[in-house]
Image 1: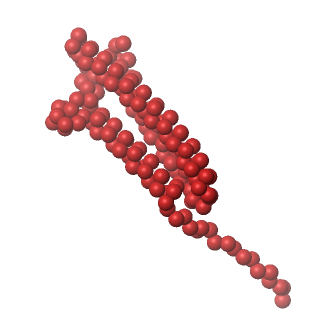
Image 2 (image 1 turned 180 degrees about the vertical axis):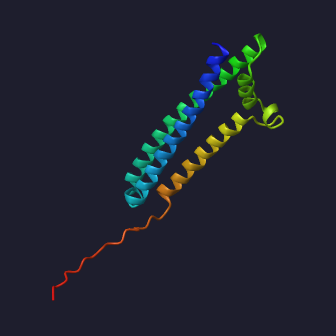
Image 3 (image 1 turned 90 degrees about the horizontal axis):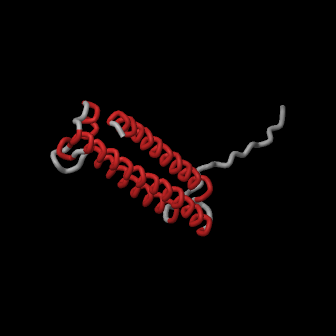
Length: 154
């Protein structure tokens, strides 16, 4: 695989990451709306079933994210191989700088590591919040019933 192909794949990887985050927010938003309108006031079995279904969906997203993480690491390793063999262009060097802790933060975490840690921490916090909202939060009806009175014409 050439450097141009690796760079192209890494740019596509960013687009896939953003699409995955978009799907995550869509699933979470739909679940919160469902909690507000019917799951929050449902019995325990219905809430448990809904939460298990949500867990299945989020679990599948997590597996896809893990696979993408391995692919990303492989592409970065290929850039290092190309760097050792031939040297890299400016685009290749900038992509390696994103993944190299010494270039990004002085040795702690790279930009890629920071994004990855943020995604996983956010994922865990969202899951815990949804667990709380499903089983412990007291949902109140916020819909007011409208009564139309029959008015007599004068």
